[in-house]
Image (tube, rainbow, N blue to C red; front, side, top):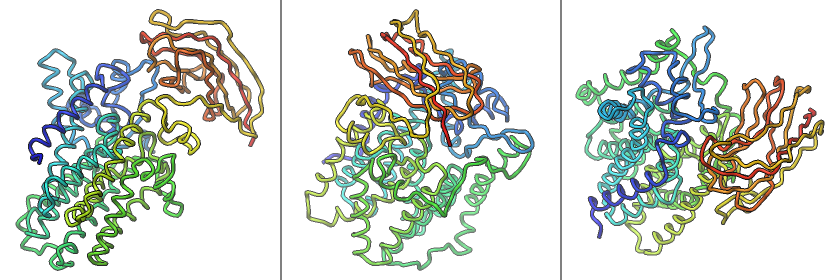
Length: 557
């Protein structure tokens, strides 16, 4: 039987090995501070290094540390009616980043790196923070399940299943652009404290602080407080003494003050940036509660939560059957928070929540989801249940690798594409389908062979004027790889540099000459001209390019 200490040492070793095998923090393409994470993180250098509420320093960081083509630029600033700009992300995650940010400052200073918030020590520390907070979350989840008398062997098995059998693995190792591993940690601590509160009337102050912090990371996660109701129904206490009395609140007055101070951080940040205390930082983005995409959110190949982490469907079924089997109120206490949060999140204007693997926004609810499964496994004599659940681990790890390698593209994977690429390590070549309302107006090509390499990174380009308002483009290239390809891409931009789209070849391309087709339907209506070329990302990658063809279409309404 593996001990708790040995389990966590083994897990730490595996995670560190996976981290350093995949991530090169010196590569402009693999920085841990990237995409949405740039917005969450930017509060720290803005406050402690630059004292700059306008975040102008990010443009220097982009030039110095990220790809020159702007392919990894993230504009997280939204303009306000008074002409100021506000960071669209909430500042809560920066509180959890803070210890690692200050370690980055220390290491950068000691080892001679730029203390600018974005040099290698900062990238490394923020990357490693994901592993630290995951392990801390697992530690509290371990403690919670032990308090519920679940055996250590089954706790270790379930934690391993959560990590290796769901998209949690993808967001710990591959994608450091989002907040959900950190919210997973907070949720695990909240459940641990909540169970102690209902059984021993302890940790009320900690619960208040945790809920405040959870809310200023993602306000929708305020629903998480409903998950705590599972414990009084589990122990048969119903709702007796669920709310603290006045004396209990007096005992935690310091925590109440800390919670209030945490909750006023967003208004303070808005005031600092815009001069206004109350700001809706997401501008035109919002919820449409009358038209949720619940079915797609849960089950679609495009980004379905349970489609991409199917083991969770079994955990949910076990959780519902076990909870309702104990008593109806316990079943309701389990089901209602999950139905409510999936309804709210599927009502968001972009229900896919961008790229990535599955629905990342559900990761923070995994500690809650697994509780009744742990209780069921502890009470059942059916030894085949855990091996059956573990069958999903190879599928999950393989599909996470496929997403990283662009075999599957998160948020864009059709059912046909999923079936075609199910067992593949590189995506199958696909022919694009021209919509019926597209009318071909121009065809241009370059048919001379070029060799892209370290000294010749850019191909010749096709440039064309656009004289219609609504434009669609098909790009066809004929090429083969001479070296391993990760950063080479087809680029389409307008001639003024306002519009830019990179179409990475990555694992699509092989050592055989093949044709690759791309369809672009998001060209802005006001472009003056378009340019298409191939670029190896200023790397040592070698590519033989035999032809580029560009087909310009007018899109008729």
